[in-house]
Length: 252
Image 1 (cartoon, rainbow, N blue to C red):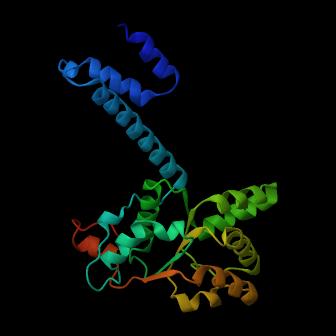
Image 2: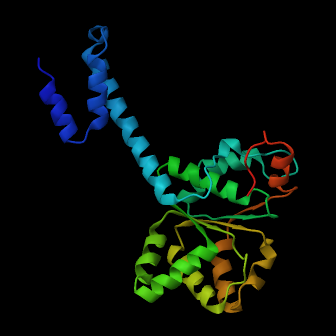
Image 3: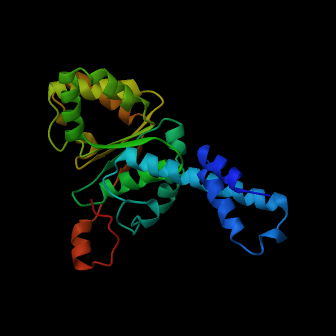
């Protein structure tokens, strides 16, 4: 049987994984010892794996995570305020499916960004759309979108993202205009969409970092209620890295 026409059709239909698997089988001398069902199963498995890899690559590209972090590499030593069992539960991503939030606070260099990006990576691996933003950059993009008429489209895109990561929350105080933009964003995402917020400020200082107290109440009501709260502690991971470069890069 001539298989080249079959291969051509697989490539034409963009079933690249199946085409690659069939070509590999043709190069194996002992492939005839396998039953038809086994060979077909291997071909389908290869196609499935290729599709999963492409989907993950696409999600990670769209997420624009600041760090290539993963939950397996998180430093959960005593004194850091990070419990391994909590990490494992969050990495399962049920909290995202349930529309909950994660609020991370801690000192500079304590690992907030790394933790946020690791949870974002876990979400991408489970097929969950994710987007990382530093809050100052997000506010710039919203201001530009308002100026060029794409504000509503940007809000709609962010509202549709299942997991939004907001890093460096409160690094500079939010003006009244910033508060309006953030309120529109979190209101569009509530309920049903999940957000990770990472901040150097302790949670009880978030309200005072926003110029409009009424909007601050509304924003925090949507973010804080029912959220998973993680307070990282200990010395800066950058200092630890300088002292011992073999330590993991959990330092932002």
